[in-house]
Image (tube, rainbow, N blue to C red; front, side, top):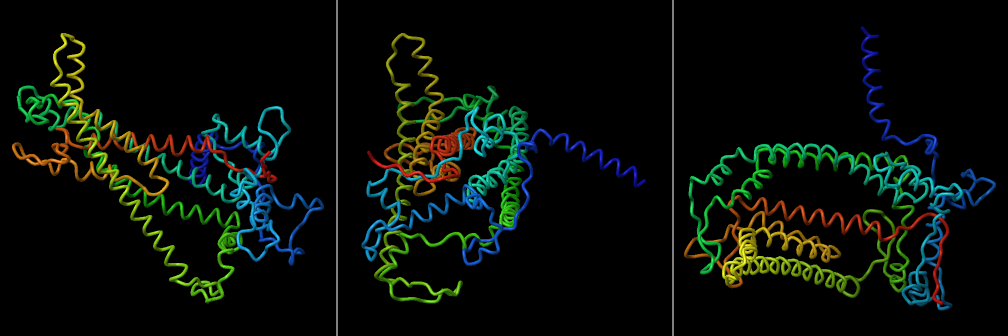
Length: 468
């Protein structure tokens, strides 16, 4: 019995390994790295370290770049040592003496060049044809350093966790497409025999219309408004919690493997610009948490102006976000009214094409307004993302739109026009369009394009560009 169970287990594990094989790294290209015991280097305790004969090989490329950066940011360039801000390559760049300072890669990535770490990572990791492969995290950390290595650890973990969420979401979407014609609200709206006449969508110029005209939008809304989406919402709430907890576990594991448990206290000294501001501070206090003796900044003379400026900026950004929401609402109301009025009051030009175009615009005025408003919201998000997180427009559509409309004969108005109403199928389809445009555009513009266009630093020696 034991032998049978062992064979079954071996068969199952072998099958899983075969399925997983295409995603694994080539062990000849990326052989497993032997774990080395790491300790923060100290010249006073140099005898504890295994230093090779070629001492320049003791530190890897990323560590050498950090050492050079540490020196360049603190090196004084003036004989007036008592004056603050007379040091650091950042200050010299700000003053225009240098154009830029950045680390160089080791070797070239093009074919035919001598083998190097950069070429190996490019050919077998960062190239598009290897998008389905697991990441060589240890080699990424060895070349770029721990900070960038941890970023790709998170990116790979996040992508893997998105797989079950995307599968469940796809199943729910297919389920919604299958039942879109079978729901009671859709059947009631799409039944031409009901002959329900609806009030005009605008005052004076717009005619009465039949409920059956909203059939298409009602069916589309049913795709995203059904029992499956409720299940998906519950699933994503659990997924978010599990993602956070599993990431904490993954992060702790990588911190232990990469010897980063004391990274903040040992490898992250205070910024030299901040230390320069503390040169004239003579008051010291014991920090209640660390127990270290630290400079104490006077509240009214140093800290209060900073707090005042920070709170002022925060309130200004909040007001800016609220103003953007009000501006988009005004745009939606005015454009919707303009489309409905223009397409219904334009003189007849004896053109069948123009008449048909006017009918199409009138029937889809709400959809056109939604799409253009979503694009404007995306633009606001891209601009305001540098300061605040701006998603108020989504909250407005989900919780406020269509709830303060009024009634026929006594409609609520804003900016001199009627408040926006939800379509016959509800506001959820509009919310889906808004989310799709914002999330897709934000992912493409802010994430993918930004990461591709803006270059990142690499390991190697530092290069300082001077002006001619």
